[in-house]
Image (cartoon, rainbow, N blue to C red; front, top):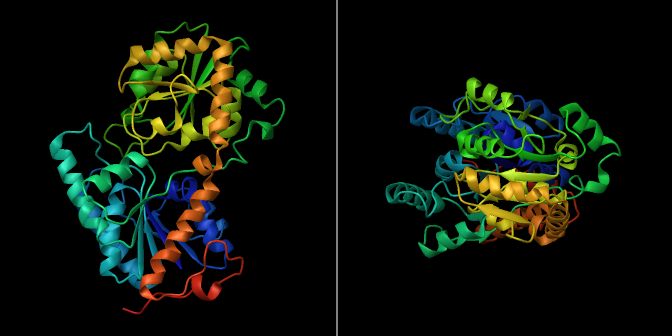
Length: 401
């Protein structure tokens, strides 16, 4: 049994389902642990068993986090998984410690993006790095998505077992050739957009950390008859920096198409002409990777993660965080259709590098990490390329407590 721990079920559904599927397809049992939510039914339909942590929350809530840690302890002592794989900042910290205390044989963590970067205040970096160092010593494998984070973890000896994982997307789903003919025209008609207008797409939760205020400001500096911003993403009221109803109404009044949560992301990207990501913090942004795979030029903030997707002047542009004027200049340059075609083609070529963007390669590395961690403790474990069901290994309960 392999259990994945995240904050909310959306992460299990949209970020980790391929890793959960990989266990199920090999005859094992996959368990998702998080706060319950609307995506539990889809997880269970995919063969993933779900265990709720009612106290798990995205917001800063130390008492709730303590309750969630106790709930996790109870789940682990009941389920006794062979592997506990933790994700996200908060579950990644308490999950590794609780997993070790609960005597889970193998504890693995994925660093999706350190919660403090070199640009943050020294006190914040100190707190985050010390907590990360403590938690890292409770795990058997540390998988780091971003090479900049990996370099930092090694430089300060925060995580002695850290290795590069990378990030990936479904390159078969995010393929322009697979979008149905007429989908682009139908969506643009739904949005009230003309063929000669430049549609800029962004995907992200409606929080300030995603750069909502400055991006709306930037698009407001452009010719409204030439450029249209389409925002895909739902509200996140649990976050302290959530965008309020008044700001959303004001953005809509300025012509921003607010689509909310959508599942037809490949079609929406195919209907767009460019992609923008104005985030203040990212680990390795899947939304930008998906846009690149769909052959769109990408304008993003010059931060960790975005620098892995965008090569300035080749497939897009990087601008400073919070710089609305810089965003406006970069997006305005995409009025040139020749530039859009050149940068979009380079994005597609970059994404087709399967070692760089393919989620199947990432899943293979995760399964290999499980096998490698099993070796030192003498636990038999199938290699990721072993085609046999291996149900006797994947489904075997953990050591009794």
